[in-house]
Amino acid sequence: MNAPSPHIALRTVQHRVKLGAALPFSVLDDNGRLLLAKGQVIANEDQLESLLGRGALVDRGELDASRRDPRKVGAETLAELWTEALDQTNRMLRASLHGDFAGALDELCGPLLALIERDPDLALFQVVRQEGMGENQYGVRHGVHTGIAAVLAAKRLGASAEEVGRALRVALTMNLSVLELQGRLAHQVFPLKPPQKVALQQHPLESRQMLEANGVSDADWLRAVAEHHETPEGTGYPTGTREPSPLAQLISAADVYTAKLSTRASRAPMPADRAVRDFFLSRKTQPAAAAILKEVGVFPPGTLVQLANGERGVVVRRGAAGNTPIVATLLNKNGEPLMSPARRDTAQAAQAISAVLTLQDLKVRMIPAKLVLVGGPPPA
Image (cartoon, rainbow, N blue to C red; front, side):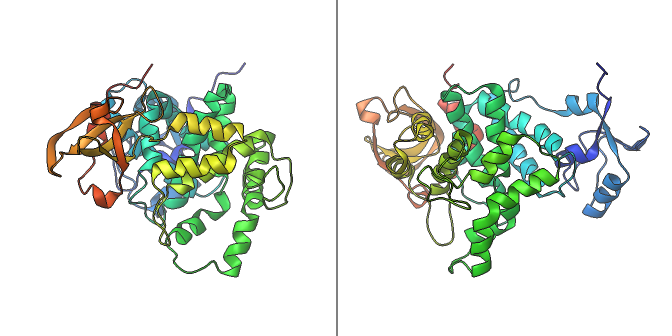
């Protein structure tokens, strides 16, 4: 077996490059000679495209050393790594498609899977607290949110590591052909225009075709992308097949659940407890839906709540039961902000959840890095 090349194409890891910021690794020419040292800056898109066009490389050892492993950093760093991973996902999926698209996605999915595995509760927090997404972020973020739910459900269903990784890849690429459109629609208050309807109707097949054209050959991945809006009842689209693959049904369930929690110009996000209830009632015969319900519980992390003692806060950890999570309180019973978030176990009667709140009910800044520490380590 041949040893792996000591270099990797810059194009494969270009999502790690943030324009105007210090490079986390050196950039080499196609002969391995230094072009830009670590810490230098790629100033604009034209400079980046020039480097990509001349086949620029990155040293694998330096690339590996520049990564922060979510399994090894302190809990206080995890929220920062989530922000970084979401930014990199946005850059990667919006970059020009190319022959090593699958390789670039592998480079992206490794850290995302490690983040989900390290702290599933913080991963679910990303799904429930979706505020502040710009138009150019919505489509990509929804893919990540769908992927988080799908990964956790797949693990509960006993999927292998390969199957779990495939589920994340499907979620990230299911809407590849309509990423821009999704962002516009999230901020659009008027009804769909006819061309938009056509694009949405055909996007599963077009996304599959884009993947095939850019080197993806995994048949299960491609099929799930093409079928993620199909249903066993034959009421889905674009073909109306009654036999979508199990992976397609898993992604469909995760897609529907996480979409209920998203903010759009035409509607507010559904409260987390109602989203779970409505989702399960509509899909209660599906194993994937049951697995998602068991993973997220009635009050998943990120849910804003009021307690029986009058305090208000946010769920930060799932509890022993689906309706008894751990809460970080942010306001006291008089509605006054606390100096530091306080940990409350809602399994205790005095601290039980009495109501689910909206963001308007809890006008206080939430800092995930602090909240995750209040919740304590995730269960083993």
